[in-house]
Length: 95
Image 1 (spheres, helix red, strand yellow):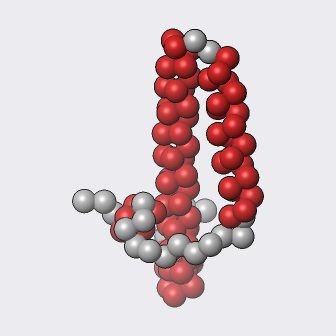
Image 2 (cartoon, one colour):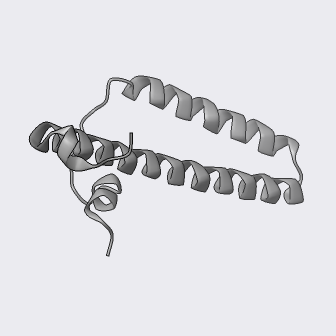
């Protein structure tokens, strides 16, 4: 079973709202897709397969990094709340 934070990150809880950068993200995604199509048009079958493997691996890495950042941000927020509630001197956290 996934942790609560992982479940929240992966969308088991519908807390998402339209972000401020939604339009910019759409433009970037469109640009990436256009560039991928152009690169694949220059490659043969073997090159296309290799490029697709590269893109998939890069996407996997990016997904892992984003999930880790999301979880670390929640943990940091939790520590901040604990310090507010209990006080820094009672938490024995590393400096």
